[in-house]
Length: 293
Image (tube, rainbow, N blue to C red):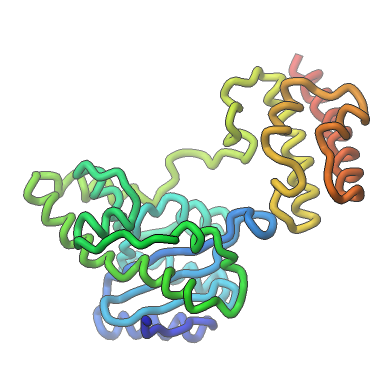
């Protein structure tokens, strides 16, 4: 069992930052847990785990302000050791407008050294600690709940426990292989977006194979589905599965009956609302296509 402190106010978060500054702590290990359209609509930061080499901290994003999170995550003089920071950086950028700064991503260094696996595998590679079982269920857990179960807290903190040691080992290997400068250059860019954030419909399997017209229909149908999911605060897939959006874009339903065949739902009220939105979306797509001619 880890000994940790809960950071559930701006005062506590600022106190933590002040303690690190006064004790010349300039590097911490960090990881996030989030909600990604599994239990409610949208993507949400649910937990920030921190380890300063001695003490563990859990920052509750629901109990601190975005401004306080920004002071932590954008602190230029506080290096944050992470594993695969891309999705975490994207999450806080979209939700709070926060740009992660001063990140050292051990995954980038590991990749330059030829490793392509996950964090558990990297721990096993560097520290010879066997990979744990059952991590998938923890990743799929509902991190929105409070209080968090002890099992989830243990899992969350285990992800930051070994990051200091892993960095030290990988940096030594990179130095031996003459890769230190390449690592340093890569770390400067690692938390930055690789390009514009893609809208959700462009991430669907099969999007790249759609014609221009089909892509327009998909955009409108996707946004109609998400509008209802957001209103109901449920994962989008519980309103309509992704594959049906692609099917509708390829073969646009002719009438309400055809839409209803694809939009069947156990809850008739949800089905009725979805069909109505999809029919309006079809008209919107037709108008957009007409303006493109």
